[in-house]
Every structure is written in structure tokens, then in C-alpha cells.
Image (cartoon, rainbow, N blue to C red; front, side, top):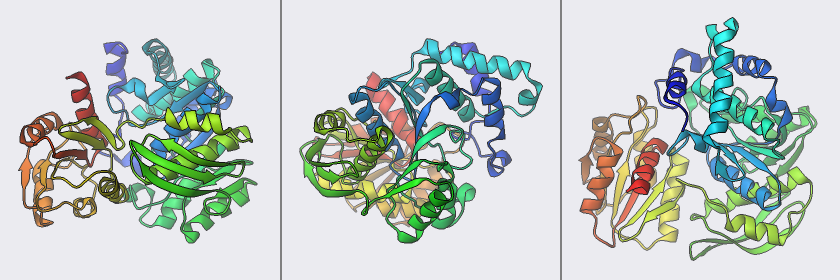
Length: 438
């Protein structure tokens, strides 16, 4: 890990992920990020990027893309957020969290710039902006062949959007972060289309024609080449298999049949397909069957339909919006025989608790443990538990803190029960870390 002094400096910056969203969050700008990068020598300009946005699936798509290109023999860097257990996870090199010495060197350079440049000191970057800048510095210094970059939120004004994009990917568009991205899918799509840059290849996973047209128009304006699901690429089959999915798919470059992906949920096939098209678009060639088989087989997406323990089953999933909760509910029904479920459930305060609860499809026999992560953005346990009762959930238990909540769940569970941890990545991350260290 980095030194306590450097971590203290980092934590002193505005963090929109864990703190209350301030007025600055409603005034989006790339100026701070562009200025910081300028004083760093614009390292992002030396990193060829695959830039990935979308309401759901972007983290899994990022990780699968990274696995495919690494299997092809490329030296790959990746950015994702938030981290589940420790901050190094946000920046990966060659499939592994960045070494603390590299991270500390990059963060120290940024701290020195902030301390010596008045214009940056007067309007300092956020926690997220600092990490993204550090990631570009590290990937530039390491001379990666490609950086696979996950957008934090939105697209146009996201701190990642200073990168030298070669391939832009849009997984889908749903209603989320509406206070900051817009209150309609069309407005959110327009914000996400901001990652499309001149002469890019643009991989579009959205299926709504009205939304797709927004991305097509944005691509046309900058002479980018759009590839649209259902037209230029498609899933030919997507079947449940032991430990994952068995898929066949057609890309603009090749057709692949009966390829295994060790991730649960039918929706992961869509993420895998987008990752495959993104990777092939980057190299402008087919990856080849052997690379696809190995790359998919090596793909992992921690915190997404991830099984941590069995007997009883403990499954974590960072479903943090309604569409994600619906996908989780569908995957649970398809992948696992129905059993009593004990949910460890926490939300951030800006979420629609009733809509999330309804999307999960909680049965009368199920138990829900309402909890809250250690973050200022967490919905209060009492507020969440009242929403659960108002939605008709019969058995609700209030437990302060994810660690106490998972201990409570395991004490209640029989061997054939299923413990499902979801609703907030901060709750999921805390539980994952606790069980990994136990």
C-alpha cells in the first residue's frame, strides 16, 4: 500500500464516490483534469485507449476486453472504479493490480504538482481525477500497448475522457445518476456519446433505435465508424452451462461457436460480445478461436455474480440500479435452484429504494438484512428498512454495517439457503474483503 502520509493527502480531496455530492458535481468540467494532465506532460496522449461507458456492464466488459487482448499478447493497462477492497485495484497492468511503488510514485508526482502550481492548488482535482491521472502516468511510463478505460460516470465530462480513444464502447443506456446526467434516457445517451472522438470505431450495445440514433449521429459528426448490435455483430446462442455460459457469436471479423465464459447471468454474454468486438476493432482483425477461448476462460469480474462461499452459498453482486437488480433477479432464477434467500442489502441515498426492492423479486419466505456501508452517501438503515416493509417484505432485520450484516446472515442461514449481498458496491466490497481475510 502507499504511505500513510500520501494516503492522508489523497483522502483530503473531494471524493464523489463516498462523500455527499457537492455543488461542484453539478458543474461538470474537464478543465481541472486537462490542466493537471498538461503539467504532467499529457501522459494520456501516449496511451491508445478503448474507452467504455454504459449504465450497466461496463466493468465486466472492461475486464473481459482486457483478458482477450492480454491473451492475444498485448501489454494491457486498465482503469476501473470504484475499488472493492483496496485502491490498487483501480489500475491494472497485465491483469494485476498496480504495484504500490508505481502507484506511490505517480501520486507523489501529482501531489508535488498540486503543491507547486497555484492554479491547481486553488481548484484541486478530485480523488477520482487524481487516480485517473495517476493511471495515465503509469500506463504511459510502462508503455502499454493499450489502455482499457472504464468511464466513472456519464462520458462527456468524466475525468477519463481526456484519453486518446481508438475504440469507444457503449454497453447500454438506462436511468441512473439522473441528477447529474439528465432525467431521460435520451439526455443520458447524449452525455455518454461524448466519449466518441474523430475516426474512432464505436461499438454500440444498446438496442433501442431512438437511443442508437443518438450515438450514430454523434459518430457521423466526427467521422467515426459505428458498429451496432443486431446489425454488425450479434449473439447467435447464449445457454446456461455449469459454472457460466456457453455462447456463439458473430463479429464483423469472424464467427465463434460454443465458447465458454465462466461468469453467471445471461447478461454477461452481451458484455462478452461487446468486449470481443472492441478487442477485434482495436487490432482490426479477428482474434482467432484459440485466443477467444482462452481469453474468455480467463475472464473474471469480481463483485459481479461472484460466489464467495458454498453451504451456504454466498453470492455478491454490485447491482446498484434498477436494471442491474432486474438482471440479478433473472440470473438467480436461471442459474440457481430456488431456495430461501437471505439478502444483505444496502443502498446509497440517491437510489429509488422501492424500485430497487421490486426489481429484486423478493419472496415472502426470504429474509432481508438492511444495512449501510461506511460512507456518507449510504442510505440510513432505518430509511431502507421502512422502504422494505412498505414494499411488502415480511422479514426485515436492521444491522449496522456490512460486516455485522454478513455475520448475522451466516448465523441465520441453513446449508441450502442462499445469501445474496447486493444493492451497493460499497456493501459488496466490504463483505468481499471480510470474507477473503477470514
